[in-house]
Image (tube, rainbow over all chains, first blue to last red; front, side, top):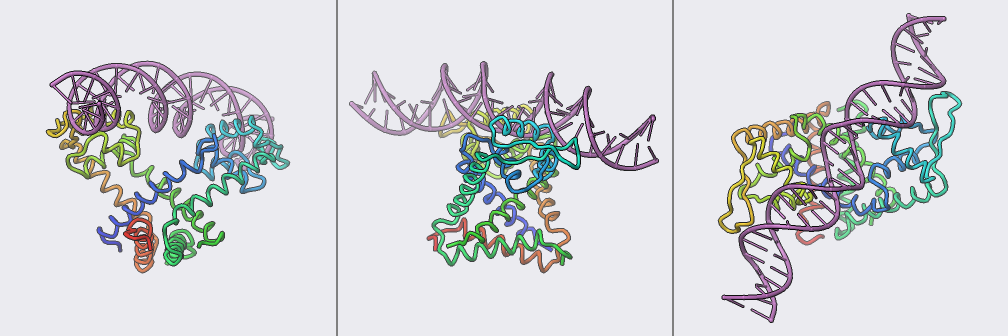
Length: 147
Length: 147
DNA sequence: TCATTTATTGGACTTTGTCCAGTAAAATTT
DNA sequence: AAATTTTACTGGACAAAGTCCAATAAATGA
């Protein structure tokens, strides 16, 4: 059971860490595309056979809003919609060539973001940071049996 | 130097962790106040002698936007503005009684949020999680000499 | 078949956030 | 000290982000 002091420290981590990532995100997503547009593009690019509804579900976004963003991406010829064989209501979203290029750019920028986060930190400490975060990840999200 | 694989894992942590906190925040800040209003209130309540500009700076918010939020909080009698002795341009922001009460409620909810995050995790693992996050905090933010 | 659910979209709207300009009070320069 | 520049705050106008509801069409279930 976490003590109040420990909870406060975790809250402090959450505040500073999300602030920090927020600041870095501002630099990363200055491609002329909004944060959400970038997220949708990344989501589409990271999957095959993805439908609008799945994008909305995965990103916890409103269906209508998602639809609008996808519409814009299609208009900009970054994404194309294809018919689904399985479900005529549904669409399959695919990145175009230039969509792929933007995807790669954003992906690159995201890598740079992490590098920037740890610049000024010694390699040893970077390694320690990596271990801490992946340990946290395992505990929080690889909860096969929660023990 | 972090490998590409390590960078990817850190990015995965960032994604899942911020998503998770985002979900929990939705539950926490359902006091009828927006996320930003709550942040401003928390910021004011956590300091004495705080000015609007300092709030904006601390929360990395637009001055005008901050001003508007404070105005609303004042209107709702959660915050009062007082004259600064040192600088007649500046104001000092103080929580009212009910502002304090709301502060306490949000603070409570934030604690619950952390508890909810770690519910289903054994005490031993919770302790390990705590250590991981505070280690990360130290490396990232307590960088007296960055080594 | 008929009723219900699901996927997607558009329209109208609210909330959030940005930009610019104005006022008044420092702070700085000359 | 007077003039200039900067700083703190605020309002108005606007843009971006997000929500809500309704409509359409296809799939699913009774």
